[in-house]
Image 1 (tube, helix red, strand yellow):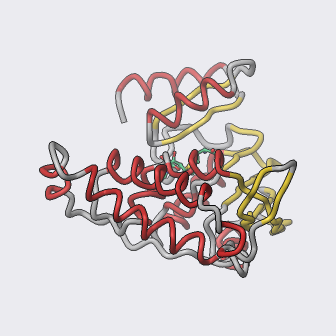
Image 2 (cartoon, rainbow, N blue to C red):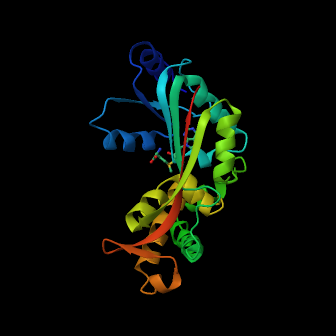
Length: 246
Ligand SMILES: C[S@@+](CC[C@H](N)C(=O)[O-])C[C@H]1O[C@@H](n2cnc3c(N)ncnc32)[C@H](O)[C@@H]1O
């Protein structure tokens, strides 16, 4: 954590108990800045499991589709931090599209095919100047295991939250959304078993996504594919968990 971030956090804590958006990745914060330009939010680069914020500060904490990237030991730490930084009576909201239960039956082929093509594409991408970087990739993040909705709810209760509710909803995800997801290194590197650096993995998974969606046999191969507003989409279940600090 840079001194600058510490300073921002100190000032926010002192003066503005408003919205603080946190991500460990600066690019993700830049995307958030563009999307939320109209709202007075503070952006803070930090690990979610150790927030540089004072106790009892916030009115709610939102964990936006990132908790699945936390390792087994880090997930409870994240809930603990969320509980610490919000006031009594304040709320927690989290969502995840990557939990145990998120794959809709019939859509498995989409994932298999995207990864298969992604691996092939990396061969072209890595054949020249990137090959050195590929060889340098050896560190795999702490084993990340997807957990189900009730386990997330239990983690929230374990740190003291009450009124914990889990909701699941099927979201039709079109090509643009899948390409945006492929831009997240945790997703693309994970899909390709951490054998490639982030830029190569993301580019390969984006190209693979395009190829799969443009396959003329797409709808026949991906049984669960749906069409929404004229666009083909692969449905995926999203989890929402809400809770309250008593
Ligand atoms: C799929 S993206 C979601 C981005 C955004 N929050 C949203 O809702 O669209 C997951 C994000 O989780 C972030 N992340 C993963 N592990 C983290 C950690 N330990 N602390 C903070 N952010 C983390 C990644 O950097 C990535 O930007």
